[in-house]
Every structure is written in structure tokens, then in C-alpha cells.
Image (cartoon, rainbow, N blue to C red; front, side):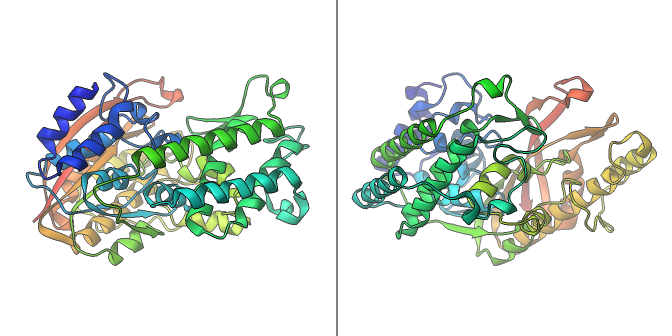
Length: 444
């Protein structure tokens, strides 16, 4: 989609936006990759603000705009129960819609708020210059920054001769973190911390892919230096400063961010016209693992107890920790059939708790939908992007199961629309046999 097509799309699908807002939104989207599907976040990686942190799981801002256009009315308020990288909230600002976002991961919550905040350009430059001054005249002491609490593989010499960061490279990272912690302006401090977080994986000996973390090939011969850290942080700041200067004007600067468990926080949301979100998929992957480096190095986690508490606050879509997996009372024949099929193949599953996890996952989604039902306006709608999973050749058809569960949660399911085909795991041949769908619900 080129610039002209983007402008035409906005003119057609965002009729309530003023001329100035349309111009700002169109300018923001010009960096989208031409021809890429709107359902994918790949075209958004180079967008201003979105490029601050490469977030694979998000969807495109055009997907947000297109989904809102399907409502038949233009909303004034929007709820995202799983904020992620903040695409929905940021798009809502450009569209002039008041957004409420919930995010349990504290690093991602800071990332979202950094994108949504309004900045004093001059003060931001002053605060950054002070951080640079301090990071070039200091050298952090690893032990004073709770070095003992981090995973043993974090810094050289690591564990079993493997480490994520070379020792002096890690020292430079912590020196910058110390300087950022001393920034008095909380808005600027948050942004600088996010920008430091955005370079951590690139400065490490690992890459994040698939369902976890692995060491780079030939990592010992290509480890990053303290100078690489300094240069990368400066580059990240320069990009952020440009984005703020060039695209800081939006139709609205208001937003609400709730930090915590969606199963709890939705009850604290006011009236909304539309809920637009994508929950974690029931693929038994705790997405907290993706952000372990940022969470530990930036100080969001200080102990194993902190890590366990964060995992426990996520949707029951994984079995990485042991917790109650009850799900009785859900009225879905397809869910019961799916769980029964998984139970018959329990010996073939890599974890015996997977059948109950599937039931618990849908119990959590129903709880969230019921809470939204109490907040959503009579003529509102819920739009959910969901994805299927497969275990031991048993398909978990999330869209169809939610279709059956909708009535019990107080909704009419208007449609389950396929968006794209997703690949199965490596163990199942990477086949594109799993469906990602948009589920559209209306209050009954």
C-alpha cells in the first residue's frame, strides 16, 4: 500500500477525522512496506514510534483502522485488554479516539506509555545530555546493582562457559541504567529506559526467535563492546527524538494505561464503545520469556519471586508454572470434545497439564469477556484477533470455540473471519495449517 492508497484508505474509512488529523495519520503511515498485508506487523517495523522496539506479535495500525471501520459506527472510546507494544492505543491517538490499555508486563507497559506520552523537546535533550555525561565519566559496580539476583548466565563468566553479555559490555549497560535512574523527569526517564531496553538483545550474545532464546552462531568471536552499547543507545535516542519532533502532533494526546492482570483490571475500566485486542494464543508459551533480558537488566525483576508473580498474572495459556487450571461450567461442546481428545493422548503430550490448560485458557477469556460486557455500550462491539493451536494432532479451534462460548458471556457472535494461515511448530513440520481469525461479538 503506497502513500496515495493510504490517504485514500483514511479518507474512506475514517470519515469522522478532521483534515489535520487525517494528514498526521497519513504522514505517520508512509513508512509502511508497500504491498505487505495489513494483518501483519512486518510493514510497521519501520514506522515512527513502532521502530523503537521490534515487536513481532503486534498487528498493523491499518489493521486497527480497518477493524474499526467494520463496526458500522465511529467509536469515541476503545479498550485494548492486552496492550503489547501499544499499536492500538497509538493508532487511536492519531484517529482521535480515547483509548484504555491494559498490560501486565512492566517493560511493555513502559514501552506503550513512552509512545503515547507528550514530551518537552528541550527538556528531553537536556536530560539525555546529562545521561551521556554521566555514562562517560562513571563505571558501574556490578555487585551494587543486585548482581547476585540475576540469572547466572547473564554476565561473563556465566554458567558452563556461556554468558549473555560480556562483562565490560554489561558494565556499560548498567552505567547507562544508573544514569537514567537519576533523571528527575519521570516521562523522560521512562523513554530513556525503554530505549536502553530496545538495544539489549542486539548487544547480547543471543537472539530471540520462535519460542525462546538461543546463542548466536559463532557468538564468541562477535561479542559486542562497550563502545557498541554507547553508539547504539545514541542511535536509538536520535531516532526517537526525530519521531517525537516529526510525528508528535495527534488528534488526541489523552490515554489511560492500566498496569496489571487483564482478568482483574477490566473491571476498573469505564464505559467503552469497542474492545479491540489480541490475547495470547493457547500455544503453551509464556511470552514473559521473550522479555526476560529487558525485565532483569532494567530492574523490573529483582528476584525469582518477582518472576513467578509476573508469570502468575498472565493468562492461563502456558504451563511454565503450576497453578489452578479449573475451567468447569463452560458451555461449549467443541471445547469439551477438544479437551477429551487431548486427554486421550496425554501420554503423547510433552506436558500432562496441557488438556486442562486449554480449558483454563478459555475460562480466562470468558471471564474477561464477561467483564467487558459490563462496561461496553449497548451498541458496542468486541473485536478479537485469535489463533489456533495443535497438540498431538488435536486442533484447538479457538475461533469456533469462542463462537460457542459467546452466548454464555452475554454476546452474539456475528462472524469469525480468517485473517491468515499460521505455521505449526517445528515438531509438526512448520505447516501453515493453523488459522488466525478475527472474532466479532456484539452485546446480546
